[in-house]
Length: 121
Image 1 (tube, helix red, strand yellow):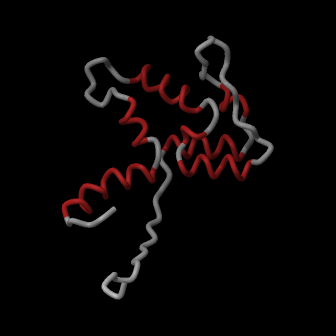
Image 2 (cartoon, rainbow, N blue to C red):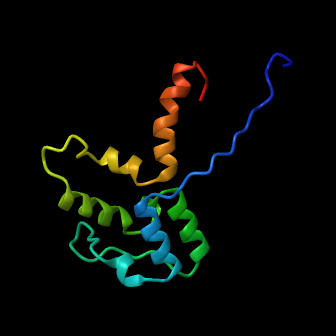
C-alpha cells in the first residue's frame, strides 16, 4: 500500500448560474409566486412548490442543482421550449441539465481534460 500516492484534494469555488441565482433569491425571500409560476405536472394542475419550512435545505438543493427543487425542472424546461427553436442543436434536455448548475458546468469542462491526462476520476 505504500505505492499508492497520498490523496490530493483541491477546493474549487464555482459561481452559481443565472438560473440558480434566480431560484436562490426566490427561496431566500420566500417568493412563493415565482416558485409556483409556470410549472405544470402531467395532470395539468400546478406543480408543487418547494417546502419553505426548512429554507437552508432548499438553498442547499439549489446550490447543488436547481432541478432538485420541487417544480423547478418543469418550469426551466418550459422556459427552454419557449426560447429555443426546433433547429437549435442545443435543444435537448442534457444541455439544460448540465448548464443549469455551476458544478455541472465545471465538471463538463474538467472531465475531458482529466481523461486526456489519463487520470482516474
